[in-house]
Image 1 (cartoon, rainbow, N blue to C red):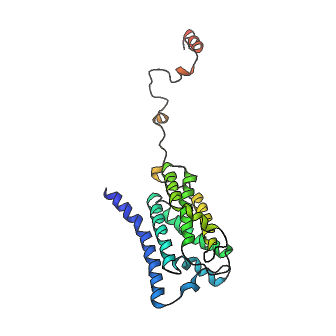
Image 2 (image 1 turned 120 degrees about the vertical axis):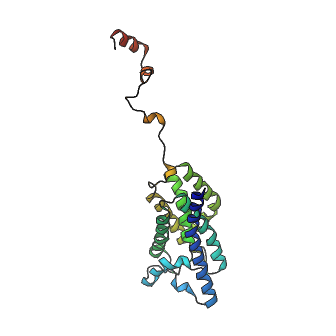
Image 3 (image 1 turned 30 degrees about the horizontal axis):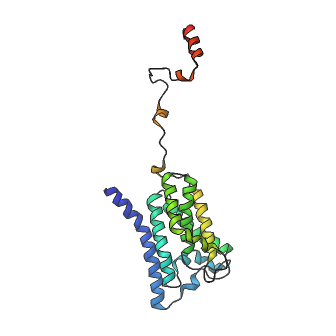
Amino acid sequence: MEQQQQKILSSLRLPFQFIVLIWAVHFFQVLTSIDFGSYGLFPREFFGLRGIIFAPLIHDDLRHLISNSAPIFLLSVMIMYFYRRVAVRSMLMIYLLTGVAVWLFGRRVFHIGASGVVYGLVSFVFWTGIFRRSLKSIILALIVTFLYSGYFLGILPNQEGISWESHLLGGLVGIFTAYWYKEEIEADEQITPPSWENETEDQAFFFDRHVFDKTKAEREKEREEGI
């Protein structure tokens, strides 16, 4: 029980710290009237590279911040709890590669907000279920589909005020990340072989192990030959 509580607490720690960080950045921006938008991601410009790190921390308004906070917290906790072996590496990969992809292929405007990362996390959990096909990963994929199926509309182009490129590219990065880590399965995803596969040939059996695979004629012939 205590070990389970420790696992839950450790799964909450990093997501909670990230949420505190993005809220602190937003309220600092509001209280100081400093616009951090220029620290966003601007594609194919050298100064825009800093947005790979800073853009997901910056939000336009409170509504934008709230809409990203809930899913990024829930999905991060889910990944930290159920995919501990790859959790930090996969989330870091999604965070950075989404920014790199938007810098390479996005419209030449400032892109801010963590929505691209959210789409990456949704895609990661869903496609991990597809690639691993363990009962746990399939159930998690179904849960994410139920909760966030409406997000698919966010990848459609030409939506005013929305970085649909971040959504689309974040989703693609999530697929890539799920595929990259598909072999690093958790202990509870290990398939236990049936007990009879562990039996050795030198074990004693009452009947010949292959007796029922032989025809009656073959058994008669073996008796006659004294086998």
